[in-house]
Amino acid sequence: MPKAPAITSHDPLPLKDKTILVTGGAQGIGRGIAQAVLAAGGRVGIGDLDAEAGKACIEEWQVGPRAHFTVLDVAREASVRRWMASALRHFGRIDGLVNNAGIANPHAAPLAELALADWNRYLATNLTGAFLCSKHALPELHKRGGAIVNIASTRALQSEPDTEAYAASKGGLVAFTHALAISSGPDVRVNAILPGWIATDAWRRPDLRSAPKLSRRDHAQHPVGRVGTPEDIGALAVYLLSSRSGFVTGQHFVVDGGMTVKMQYA
Ligand SMILES: NC(=O)c1ccc[n+]([C@@H]2O[C@H](COP(=O)([O-])OP(=O)(O)OC[C@H]3O[C@@H](n4cnc5c(N)ncnc54)[C@H](O)[C@@H]3O)[C@@H](O)[C@H]2O)c1
Image (cartoon, rainbow, N blue to C red; front, side, top):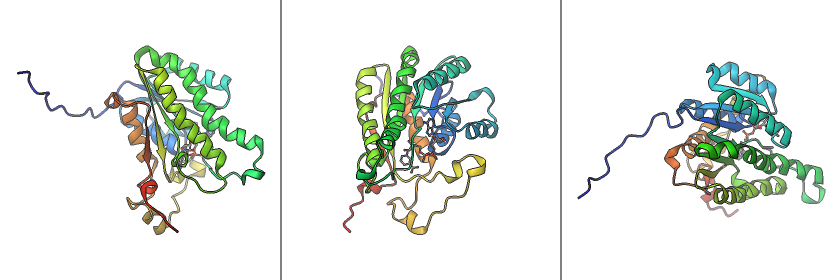
């Protein structure tokens, strides 16, 4: 009879020697993901519109060549090309991509007053940005196998009024995730995380940083008893980027402290 598989302990550094690129990685959830990648033994290339925030990360992290920053606008293909080329020159390889950059404020305007330019702005950053970065990362990811993680939102599934552009961009990102998972396998896996309420105030660049101003009610309405943090998203991103999630692709995962499963009748 063959022996039963042995008990094997988990690798404490699941991203050791992996290079992960994170868009919008200089502040907020993106910075949380970038730090989780570093904590998991990886190298991180952050691209962000905000040069000050990017420089502050490099100064504060003190990890030498394990981190690299380039100014990036995910909505512009030339900028995405430059970012990939610069990261590749620095690291020599790309093993993972996190499409996190987004216009994070969901509230735009009532639909009848929503300017086409504003609708296009949401779609360009939140959805087209993920397309452009994935397109230009894929040739490298295919070389050794890799993973893409898209940061969508629970607003892909449920809504408040006047959030159509944001919700549509995030719903599009979920569909983009399963479509790309089917096209890019077996060597590249693609998954999405749908964060709920994540407090990012403490994760901004130094001059904009503050302690989160959250009430007891803000925390208590969540079934887990608290608002989320960028670390909550970073933890799942590390799993989805590592080989431990090797049988997981095309999926989306809600990380919202239980808010979307809480039944509410006003
Ligand atoms: N914070 C939340 O509660 C929450 C909830 C669900 C989903 N999300 C999503 O998570 C992602 C990050 O949100 P956040 O709250 O950390 O936002 P944030 O505004 O704190 O950080 C976003 C970062 O992306 C950068 N960025 C914006 N546009 C860019 C562009 N065109 N190119 C490159 N970089 C750009 C910004 O400079 C900033 O550093 C977004 O996609 C957002 O929609 C956030």
